[in-house]
Amino acid sequence: MKKSLIALAIASAVSAPAFAATANVDIYGRMAFSLDYVDTNNLIGDGADVVTGRDNVSRFGIKGTEDLGNGLAAIWQVEMALNANSAAGATSLRNTFVGLSSKSLGTVILGRHDTPYKMATGNLDIFSDTAGDYNTIIGTTSAGTIYDNRATQTVAYMSPTWTGFSFAAAYVEAKNVEAGAADNVQAASAMAKYVNGPIFASLAYETFSGAAGGGSTTTAETEAYKAGLGVKLGALQLGAVYEIIDSAAAASANERDAYYMNAMYSIGAVDLKAAYGMAKDGESAASTEMDYYVVGADYNLSKRTKLFGLYTSLANGNGTALSQSTTGYTAEAGQDVEIVSLGVVHTF
Image (tube, rainbow, N blue to C red; front, top):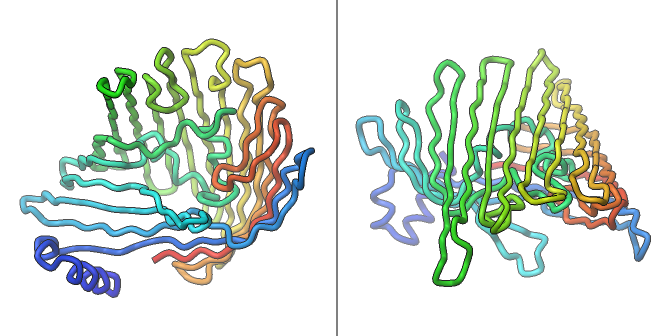
């Protein structure tokens, strides 16, 4: 109720006539910061530092719906990553779209949104948006995180749920011949999932071509396949993801298999968590194999506020110089990255 009243006051101050057409507007967000100790084990320079107040993917959003009758609704959302660590405090857009939604027919959106491939296993990432995020391995090759993306210029469809089953598909095509850009810049993504009580299962596929992303080039496309499985056994939650990324380019480091598994056990307000992931070598001469593990715990002060702590270590192959996906702490090729992170998260 408070969020709706705040949204009403903001919208009224900006544009009363525009707001009159929209009955439901909500403000939401996530504030998450941590104190980190980082050791990149670099041979040159200072490889260890304390980092204060690191932004763990804080964001702010506003969204709304309009009832169009006959079970149809207009939906829209504008969401920003706050990027509080940047010197200029510059924001960037996250899921930002407009669309139509029907409980019986599904939802169609246009704009910027997580791909179905990303959505397929997102809820299996128990360290999401921290230094232990599973994108350290999942969606990642020696070139960086090339899959598990948020796509621009996308048209997407999300089905209703039928006895636990649902699916989603998205398509992107961008042509800019006048500017001399490559033609056939395309991407497609699809996923299916089953959620029933304690069981979660999903399958996903995605492909990029024409340098649209995903490590593709104007002459070589890439594609990825992913399967996820989760189960809750009382206070114990288990999850696993298997992923294949293929590239049409010869001797590509972007061609590899990856594995990820995790466990979480809840004791009252405390969640004990652990995860392990490994990406196998690509086809390049240098070793691009990498693996990581993370252990940690959350202390839930309320439904919206928690404290967290974790330790994570990433071992790079001699042809890989990556960091945990959300941190930006850079390692030299073949060096490990170790992080201790203590923080607080509040959602609203």
